[in-house]
Length: 323
Length: 265
Image (cartoon, each protein chain N blue to C red):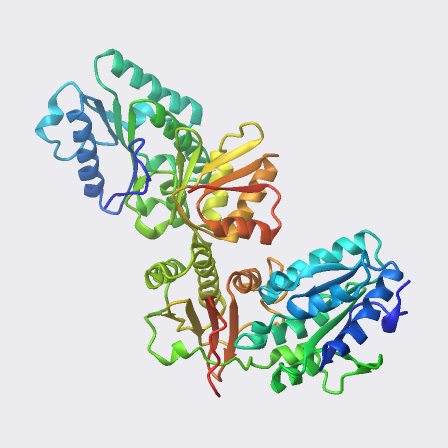
């Protein structure tokens, strides 16, 4: 039987834990974990750094709590969704009535790529809703920017308080509405310069060759292969489902490459496009999902007459410029 | 222009698509002249002899063979029998003191209908396999006006050398140990790749269909899914030997169980 605030209900109980000290984190996190183990529920920690250490040091030896490496779980938003869904399916198949996870994003996720993690936090309300899951997503209010905390409140329907209460978030926004908004991602400063290469209506094969040409040995073989896949898929979609002209632009810096693909269409109608696995018959959905899985940052933006996907391979966490 | 996509030359087997018959003539004459210089017996197979055969083509090593003399009248090949015909001709040429057999044939009449094309594609692979291990070389000519773009792409992709440029971006041909997959597999080649796999029937050895993809430069999820479906139909595992690191990641992403990627340097 399911325990805690979600007892008696089905699906995902997605709760934010905004804490302002290690003591507050422990005050909420420890009972969450210990109660989970006592109830026989798979109970996990997906954190790195000091937070994980604080919990590990305080939990009794052999507590039964499983520690995942926060950094590797949260490498990319779409990879995290895929990895968690696989793990949750396994627990449910083995008879779990509830799975508890306390997680924390690595600090880098709260910077230049936060928009994609905010979309992750929104999308998982649907992506995990088929599982009896209770997660606490920890955010340290001392180091988390205010605009990030506002997104946290919009993407988590529930909030845990340090004194043990579970509140509804007053600004929670349905994912369909939240994801329909344009991402508010900062421009990559590299894009202030003219692109290294621009192609109008390229065939996918020409787009792939252009990525190789501009890379010039900057990216690792893995990052280059993956960027080529992503650009090829996005150009394919733009040619097939967008409106002409399709414009590919490429920028290269010492630690990363940025590709933008712009077409004259409105972009995918499905607000979850790219975030959730798509079926073969959804228009371009699988290719887009693969593109999201293949690079470190994807940003979708729209104007009245254009739809643009920006793909970053290599270090997507460039230093934020004031905006 | 004939482009050779082989990472290392193994055998001469080229596709010459022509809109102007003189292109076929000129390419065939060059192809056969190379054979004459190498001491091979050479055949020019078409409905009529070349318009202006060079002087070197007057000796006993050169033969004009009418199409009807080597291919069935209805244009539907028996793939094994046809491949054996050329293999036996090669053996006779060797017995007569030549170093091998080289054939330039206008094979347009063998690929006009769906039934003809199905048999022809299987034959292409079988005769290609002979060329890897025996001194047979072949040039297959096709009148573009008589074939659909898809049929031409299906034929061209089975030749290591072709003048079709970017019309089909990948090649699938016989190698010394397994079939060789080169070039790029993207949405433009999806249907052709799935179609030729079905017709060519790559060999299953110990439950595995191995594709030497060491010179493959791109493969997308569509091609990997085609491979998965094909391997399932053959009740086998497709083994893709490739240096492309994205291939293994795509296989994992897609959860494919019948495609195994083996990393090569």
